[in-house]
Image 1 (cartoon, rainbow, N blue to C red):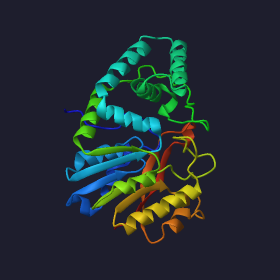
Image 2: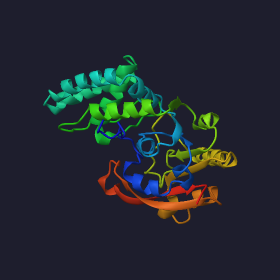
Image 3: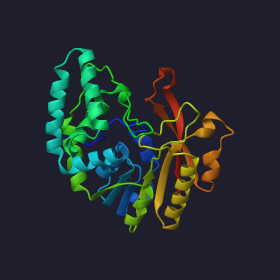
Image 4: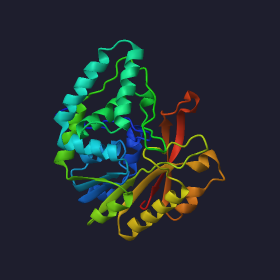
Amino acid sequence: MSTEAKPFLKWAGGKGQLLNQLSEHLPARIHREPFTYVEPFVGGGAMLFLMLQRFGNIKRAIINDVNEDLILAYQTIKNDVEALICRLEAVEKDYLRIKDQNQRSNLFYEIRERYNQHIGDSIERVSQLLFLNKTCFNGLYRVNKKGLFNVPFGKYSNPTICNAEVLRADSLLLQSAKVDICQGDYTQTLEHVDGLAFFYLDPPYRPLDATSSFTAYAKGDFDDDDQRALADFCHQLSDRGCLWMESNADCSAKNPKDTFFEKLYKGYHIERVLASRFINANPSKRGKLTELLIKNYE
């Protein structure tokens, strides 16, 4: 298959535009030794698909996320992609034959309601997730405190709801590699590790200010106590001899007095990479900013 495997969802905080920079900071050992690759916060999977395609010496991959529907999507794409494509092609056909935006909006909210009410089997649920992601405002995935998807309709004229080639490429890659797909707390990923392991951690970012927080990928927030718990987890990884790299917000760039991460990860290697912020309701707040890369290796 000539199509390259890549993320099947647009995901806030996705690493597609940072892959080249992240690649420059990968540990040297994984270029020459068999290893286990682990993503405790897999999200859209940009890094996952890059690693699986670039490193033939990955003997096992473990991906995890707390978001149940996201993990269901990975499982469905791996194990039942043709049924998913069939369902998506049908909803895409129904949607695109509607030319009036008001009528499209009505269909969007009908599907959003079915999604929030958990109406349908697992294939339909994943198709609803992908449909909403491709047709909602700005491609956001966001839930409220009740766990209900609440992103409004996006007025796109010709969205690609079913990219069958990408879905098949993703499925083949997930099947061909030894990929274990887990759902739940990120700490469980450590239980599956044996031998040399490289962890890439991309948690919900600490907000730069009161208005920039966007951590609602799942019910509940990821606050400073959670960031501290994650740092403790990274210490455990180091004690186990694992290699790890974490992405997070560069809070001190916004406020020089906010050295939260510099203190939390004192003794580790902290680098900065330039990123673009695309997902923000306010266009004036989109643009370039730095992010942190924290590593336990040089």
